[in-house]
Amino acid sequence: MAAEEPAVGVESRVVVHNIAKRHNVGTMARSATASGVTEFILVGRRDFNTFGSHGSTSHLRFRHFHSLTDALTLRSEIIDGAVAVNHHPFRKSTTFLLGNEGTGLSPKECEICDFFVYIPQYGCGTASLNVTVAASIALHHFGGMPLLLGFVPCLNNFCSKCFDN
Image (tube, rainbow, N blue to C red; front, side):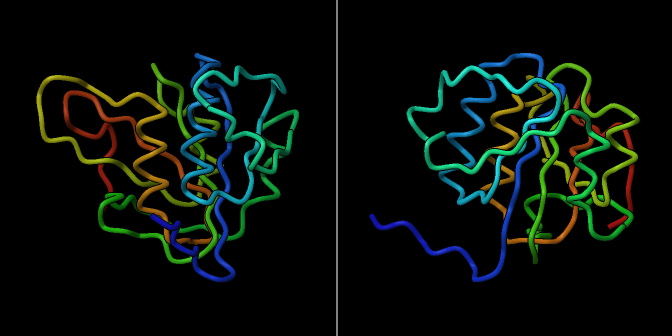
């Protein structure tokens, strides 16, 4: 099956910051490649484990920033509220910032986000998804939006913050 063409002029970036398990970065790179991500941005540590990437890292453009503050150059506008990712809120170029596997986004990370999305969970068997799974779901739903997105951590099937749609 041939790959679908991404929308013209619409780009997406993935920002990797504070990910505890370095092998998750390689798996995220694989999902990013499959989703047509334009740029993969590493914040802080430059190194990562390519386990799980299956060669996909050679198809991505990488950029490194020493701090999250330095990566703020990717922002463009501020919008309040969180929207379920399955409502397909993406319309323009987007940068994705994913939270730490255990703690979600830090307050500092939340401050720089323009927009939040969450992944609805319907079962009671787990409190959250693996960061690479969450990234894959969000990237699958991507259609673009010039915003820096943050994932609100969900605990016990309820988001820890409530936002109006």
